[in-house]
Image (cartoon, rainbow, N blue to C red; front, side, top):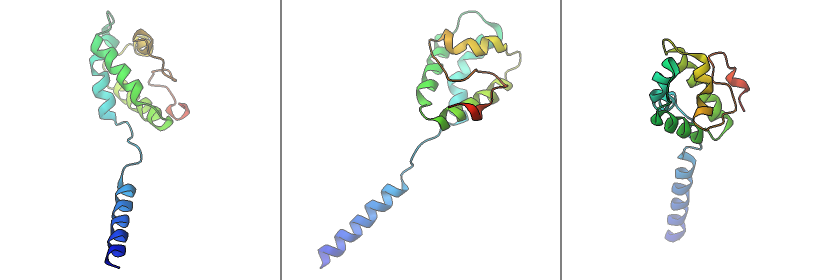
Length: 117
């Protein structure tokens, strides 16, 4: 009987741990900002795209696996872009292509991120 009670307690403890695990981690604006920070000089002045910028764009793209992740990344990119003084919108929107990455929305401060799938 003691074994049965111990098994039940163990089962309850395991169940609590599984329920407490996060289901999914959403992309944070901090992650977005840190990944695209090396791109600031390019999107304001042009020239060669820094390798660190493309690495960040690729990392961010690989992190955005779900619709909610892509929408969160889109909203964060809009915030980051809005805070870059002297941003050239054409350079910003062309950045994924320059880095060999395809994103399902236009990088722009006017993008409706709710429509991003």
